Length: 221
Image (cartoon, rainbow, N blue to C red; front, top):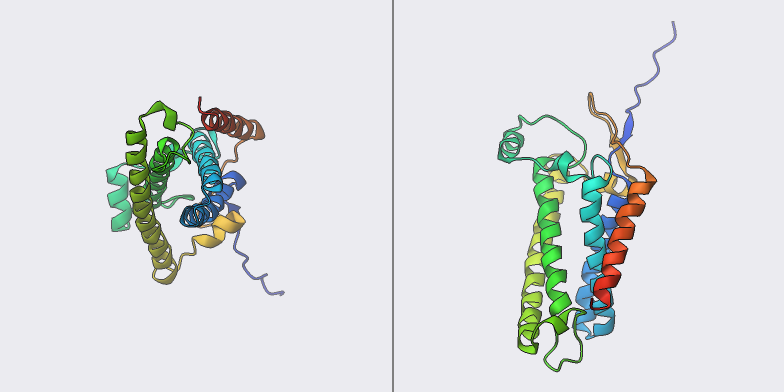
């Protein structure tokens, strides 16, 4: 009697390409924007900020009409679900866990505030101005520039906590969160089904709307 074939874990898709691309573009853009600000390369800094604005807009739209694991309705949970997860009683599901969902919401909120402040910011001499700075006074614009710098420090603190959480899951819980965000898939748990991918036309709507609004903002409305 022949031996049974070795068990092979089934891999399932959990993150679509747009979600993964957004994640890694943010990873690249945050240090790039810091560096351009430190080196006073403000033209490039403003351009990168507008790019970040477009990415955040796209992620918000994609959170409404994207693939199942990208939609806010698919992963944002209330306090009861969060407490159940912390107690270890939560139902296993693919995508963001309730704590990861809070992290996503926090990141999008902080990035929205950061780029929003930058749109209205201006330097002391008024040489470099955000595309919407003409809607406020020079004094207000300079104040918003200071808030823009302060908010970046807050963003860095959050990013540090986010990295610490990833290391905690990797070292303590033996759960690699980075790999699936690169490949888009991971080994399936019992009863887990792959994500429901969104059709191409939804991506085109989200990307087109984000691009149109970004261009409108970039030209100062």
